[in-house]
Length: 200
Image 1 (cartoon, helix red, strand yellow):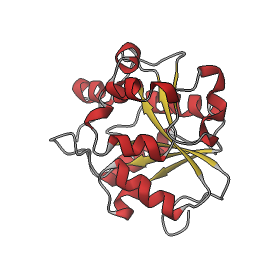
Image 2: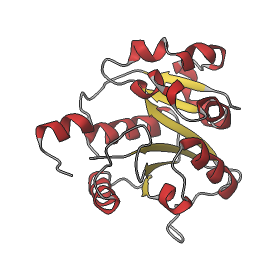
Image 3: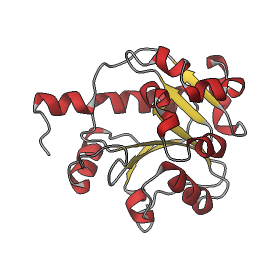
Image 4: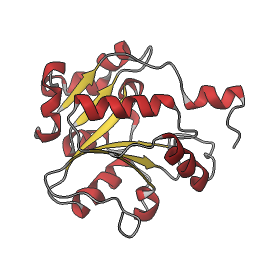
């Protein structure tokens, strides 16, 4: 990293997994490895957000979440970053706009769980996000059907790549998206907090 920003060269295919990671867990690691393999990515960056605008309660301190993420996800192709804090952005659309300017020629793919696609139409400037970068959607327990029927999936149905073609997603012109299905881990940050295994 230079000046706190991850390094990527033009032509590289980089997946972006954003979230509060409050706390990070094995499900995050699972879908990261899955995306690296199925989408043919050179790297995945975990974008640990300062806070989720859709949630009323703030997360644990950023430094603690960053340290936990780095301890959990020790992989040569994964970078844990606080780039949104450094950029001063709170919404995904603004973050992506800034990153496309900062990293010309890098092929970014936004990664999200199927549960996020189901509510994607509530995100700020969600249509602009769909049209800025390709999106890789990874199945989550109980979320696949709702994702497939979501307003975002219906609106952009003709731009969906079949699973067999997921490896070309990173180089596809936007809008483009795919829904990957396969082995899943039934774990969530909210469940970990409910159990008391992560106290803010």
